[in-house]
Length: 532
Ligand SMILES: [Zn+2]
Image (cartoon, rainbow, N blue to C red; front, top):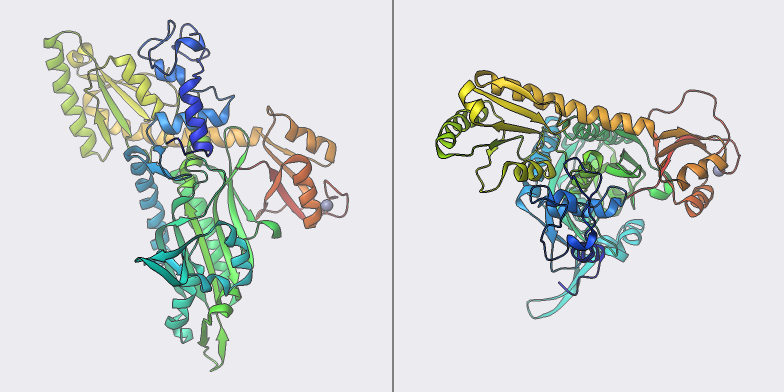
């Protein structure tokens, strides 16, 4: 692992050598000196064995450290021996599978079918679309040698599949009757990144890429927007409980080779933006380069219109940073790998028997009701287990002790409010847990939306605009009029590090004001933010 010198590696090394104690944490009664909670792993004087790993979680004030701590300590991912790549561990992969299934359902429900293309693309394919190759060339991985000899033509490890898919579509599309072509693939892609962070930016990542062909520009545009709003926004807001803003990207942020790029943008817990998914109207650029032509109803041969759209494992990073708190992850119930965890509590053996009987009964009832449940019988103290499952963000904890067993009841504790304990009769546990999971899903969304609203400002003068981005306590989204000029946009970025996230589809109806930077007439209402 010594050769791993990217961000993921450095941060992990730091984490092992300079653990920060958590003082402000509930349950952390005393503050352990930094030296006491070291790489040797022994809990310090103030850290009990039960809350040790929560104490070790970096404070959210050091947001990037906190993020890495959560990713690694909750066992979502681990470093890989390959620079910039990550290993997704079972808990992280189960989360991805749940997300994948719910997104895939929406993709299919809107008429798309899945297929699969090769990992390798002939380099010449990339060169056929000038803007595309210029955009991707710096970050492609090339295979020049295989089977013991130099390849006649280098192969690109796909950074995205527009070109190879365009090549095949040209052979599949002949008539207007073949259209629209609505396909999607789930795959891995490789983009050689210099600075990487697990889930947010990795050299290899998992995603889906949809690729469609249409008769007219209007149809392609309708598809692009339908995917953005009805598929991506709906999925991210309902299943991941992440409120997002849907809008058009400025020219400078357009996908290489696209006519128009749209995105959904969410606000993370530190006030920065995360682009959660993109949808591109590719116009006729790729269709022209690859000869996707069809005979229209009027007998004329025409060039088709194409779209592409993608969402990736980056969404996991977005989920962590939208909902996580000082104790770790908070999983939205709809995608949580484990929705409810049962923690049995007992002291003596006879107690254990009674508790075990009720645990089995409750576990079976929950499973029957479709709840993803796990009973934690590890040889650890209950306090340790509480902290451990809180770190992993399990939405509902179910405590079952001897008195509960005697009374035929359990105690429910929601991850979103650990003071809101409630006793529930065993007969109604399944029903109550299902309702509670829905309440938690809604609470997470409401809290994220309230946070975004608190951290969203309008600015009409550049001084206040700059001030908002200079202060970490106010960092968030700033809405303002913009003149539409790329030079002006670049100057704003150079001076404040803030970029135009998008021009929201819900544009302000009022009279445009002056551009917040140059004072010229505004042409678009834009959302500015520092971004991941
Ligand atoms: Zn301007």
